[in-house]
Structure formats: C-alpha cells, structure tokens
Image (tube, rainbow, N blue to C red):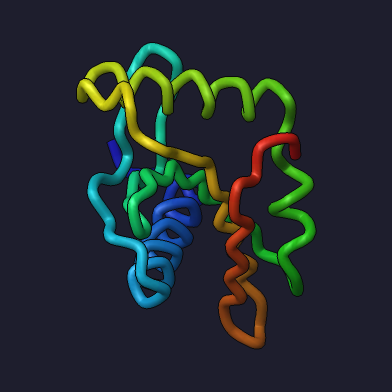
Length: 121
C-alpha cells in the first residue's frame, strides 16, 4: 500500500527535522519507535540527556499551525511512549526531556523550529 499524501508530508518533515537536529548537535539514536502507547518520531541524545522529539509538519507560511496541532491527548501519548522506551531499554536513571520540532513548508522553503522541553503545550 502506498503512503497517503499526509504520510508523505510527515515523512518529509521528519527527514528535514532529523537533518536539522543533527546539525544542531543532537545525536539521532532511533526514528519511528512504536509501542502500545504510540510512536516516538525521533529519539536522540544531546549532551547527557535523552531527547524524545515529536515532529509536526504543516504546509504553511510559519510554524504556528504545527505548534497549535498538539493536543493534551497527544502530549499524554508522547510522554507515555517516552516512559515505555526508557523502561524497554532499561534507562531508569537517565535525564530526559521532550522537544517539539515544527516544520513549516512554504513557498519560501522549509522553516524549522525546535522547542526544547516542550511539555505543557
């Protein structure tokens, strides 16, 4: 089954975000990790911290629509998936956070914004 236009857009945004994050010093560990709680788009390390990154991509002139697309339910699923990842990989005593990578695809080209420690959207 071929991907839908929405899935293609999401994958493209994740690729752009992963390249941008790597250029910003994030070490990409894994992408699209799935568990019962949901999916983690990008798992990385930065310094001594583990970082779970949710990528939101929209066709827009700026990143606001992507930021606004995060609901409380989505935030809860991301946190539950992050905790499941830590448990599955026996990373009980590590420092971690959730970042949000928002990608706006406009006629001017992609804009990417990283929001560190983004819980409490």
